[in-house]
Length: 209
Image (cartoon, rainbow, N blue to C red; front, side):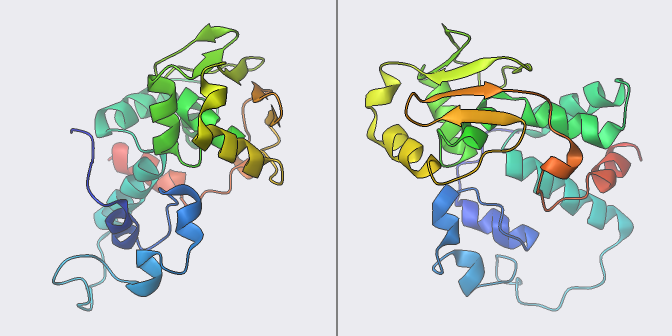
């Protein structure tokens, strides 16, 4: 599957819930799902039949994959890795997703969305432990320091995001200094730390069928 370049509001309407793929703009009352709270397409307003068990699990998998904005191949590979590790598979899976560098950059508040975070990483504006990293899927580990490069600190969007982050709390597994634009990945998150509108058990059941 290639990179999705269509309107992301369609994805939210398809899943029937705000996925916050456009960052702060998703809080606007003009958001498409607020104005048209039904699936996209000419048959979107039709009364849907009761979905099958397979359809319920598929939709949950698609919702979770779209929240993190990664391809099906990457998503499945992470699931297979999680299924081989010790611990609760769903929690391990979420920890692997949360440990991606693009996600950490978003969670710290350096970027307003995961899509923007991927762009900042790819353009070389993010450093991990004083080394520039340009791979969005890079695995961040507990104790790693994530910082905006000197060139990145001059970018208006990053400055605006850092300013907005001053009045916002990061997750308890992270810490961020908006003034210095430096953050730290303190530990792996617990399931209760993540306010995600997904049931990861359904995703596990989808791949385990």
